[in-house]
Image (tube, rainbow, N blue to C red; front, top):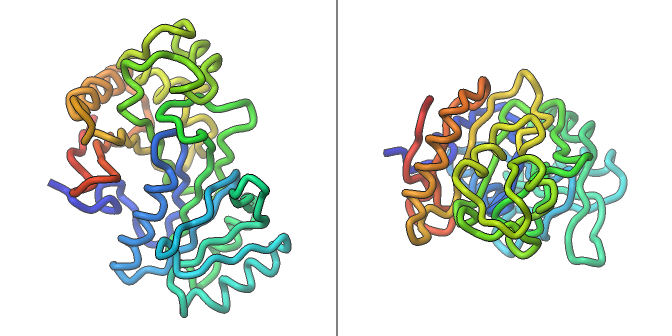
Length: 258
């Protein structure tokens, strides 16, 4: 069994990792950063949309500035010292941080000091399931690995604003009427549809599906059902499906290959 998230997802030095989907992106981002630090790598975490401000201990340093040139310069001068820096352009009234441009993501990746850049490239307002809006996800062209997350706790839930981000779009993609319950087939469609959560992944990037929250009741069984439905669709890019539990140990329960 693979215990390490970085190993399970296949993250390596010089990767730009974009996290999309719903059900634990921010938790995954900071957990990956911690693992990479333990491996001696230097990490930049950021977003191209919005993220919650990191809690104490989640990052070595937080730098917020509207001038992207200053952000790049701060990372270049201080990443050796802090090993993990989170960057953003603005603190919003909502308490969230406004993200950086795709261009700056590429510039940070090209810095000699940087080993891995992790980008939250999608918003989901804390829901376990989502479908992207027209302008989402915002995946930088420098991305080498896209990780798409769904919360297995969404399966069996009613397709509504309470449980799903963009329920009307989810309904359109999956064929499940608003108010009906989400099936394993619907979850698999969200993973594999051209307008689903992998939408806009660069053609050159690796693609991994991550089914989170398998520690919840019947979570592993639900995740295996979803994974089988995903595999049945023979998506050409998904190289593996990771069953995980970001709030429990070990974080990786199973890795399923096509």
